[in-house]
Length: 318
Ligand code: BMA
Image 1: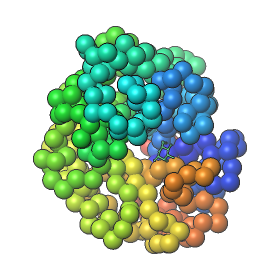
Image 2: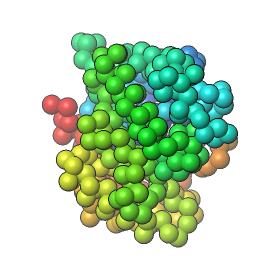
Image 3: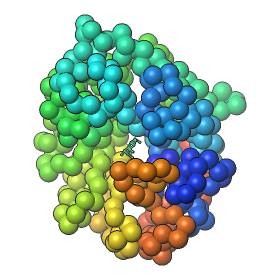
Image 4: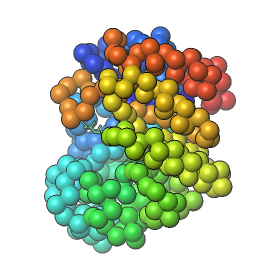
């Protein structure tokens, strides 16, 4: 399945246009997987760090489910110890401070309460809870988020996962959320599993990997091979949970991606957002008039890729 972050919210040159998606502008069909970002929900704010309103995100998640698509949620939550952003790595005591006994534990519980409140709103008119894939504390093999490798111990990271999942399941009675473990780049399975919180709480195995130069395809192939093999062994689902490349310079990017990933049993590959605003990156999905559009159509037409229309026919939720 092909996925796109914030697919229905905005794209290059537009914000909040009903029914629109940059991917749809190019191929006439929506992605099969839709990524959503909940950063700043924990603050009680009405909109995300990317300025998308949470009530709209809620409605889109329900809409996507009703047409048979898949929703996945990331969370660039603020630093509960310093009050800074998710990228504030000024302290290596943040994870410790929010675990039971820590001085920010109650604040973290408030963050989780707000998250739980949002999850509980993901319900259709007939009262069915909408299943979502939640992918917290991601890219933890790097050290750019406060939960990253050099910012907490293995035990602390795993405890953070356990506390979060237990709290949502046991205290908040939330059972329509699946959990995705999602590292950044890695070379070996030992590295991948170094901070793995355990088969009993993780449903999906993924990794994030961006194309930042010539080593990309080789690294992608290695990561995809290792994660899909591990998922098979563990009877879990594997995915490329985030990627994106220089699609305006390399107009063959999509078919190269497909060629690299084809041999592996992967559930989806999601590309990150097409910022509507000035951001530190450009579009990761094609948009009306983008130079990679022809190549993306080829990617779309390949029998191995699935988009919304085919997913609807497959009735994933039946
Ligand atoms: C990053 C960038 C940021 C954004 C964040 C959360 O990769 O796209 O601009 O705020 O993701 O969506």
